[in-house]
Amino acid sequence: QSSDKKQFMVFGVAFYNLENLFDTINNNGKYDLEYSPKGQRQWNSEKYNAKLENLARCIGAMTTKTTPMGPAVIGVSEIENKSVLDDLVRQEAIRKWHLQVIHHDSPDRRGVDVGLLYNPRLFKPVDVTNHTLTIPGYESFRTRDQMCVTGVLGGDTVSIIVNHWPSRLGGQERSSYLREAAADLSKHIADSLWAIRPGQGVIIMGDLNDDPMDRSCAVNLGAKKDEKGVTAHGFYNPWWKMLDKGIGTLAYKSQWNLFDQIIISGTLLEGNASRPEALRYWKCQVNNFDFLIDREGQRQGYPHRTFAAGQWLNGYSDHFPTEIFLIKER
Image 1 (cartoon, rainbow, N blue to C red):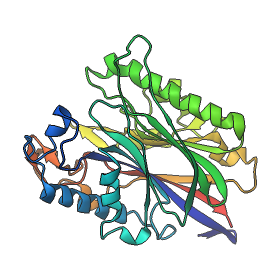
Image 2 (spheres, rainbow, N blue to C red; image 1 turned 60 degrees about the vertical axis):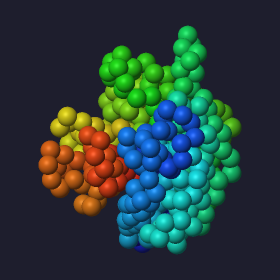
Image 3 (cartoon, rainbow, N blue to C red; image 1 turned 30 degrees about the horizontal axis):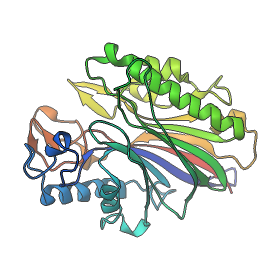
Image 4 (cartoon, rainbow, N blue to C red; image 1 turned 45 degrees about the horizontal axis):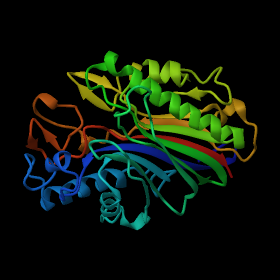
């Protein structure tokens, strides 16, 4: 890709909520029973393997002219354990990329975790830390840990914080304080990274269970709708304008939401070019490929999911994946 004779390297950074990627073995009691052959979903090897094949097809489709090997990094959520990711990266559609897996067991009650897949030819991890969200006064509260992976991408150091913020169970308003606390934790992680390397890029990604204009993102994280005026240690949220245009990643009661966000720090924006070798944010997209979209019935136009109303649909996920592109001058 060239402009004014400049040559750029391009890197994709993606996020995908894999919608309950569970194996068929029941190993944590009641929550896991649902995803076992005896459970209500009659989750068996045939369904599990079909799900893996579908997800791999989607990840395999995430190539562009400038990123022929797909995303350098893919954050994932709603996975049961490391072995389901090991099974995923071995699928035919993506095996050639030799994607590596970073995973850590979260204390979440449903037993779902976040994880990170990366292409070792493009990204070299140097450090992984995991951060537990605790809510004062709610000692029994358990959710997904936030995983921070710092690594080298295109010769520049960048940290990726993978999230799956608390759900809207009990309603958006009543549960908002949980996601605000999660946003505070992400911001705290970013600030502690900058205390060591003030110029580095920080990417906060995940299923945030909130939209860009909601309090957690807009106020607690302070992620802005416009690049203008974002300070080096502030955040820009490119998905806000996307949702304004009616493009989302999941649909609920005929309303689109964009929970699957990839929020970028000011250190990755053009205006704050403190370092010549720095990666720069270029653009973002929702990877709502045609084959991921339901074609019929009342869910027409929505993500084609694995189950709906208890029925197995042999779909992909109830979320579309999202992706940003970072560029670096050669």
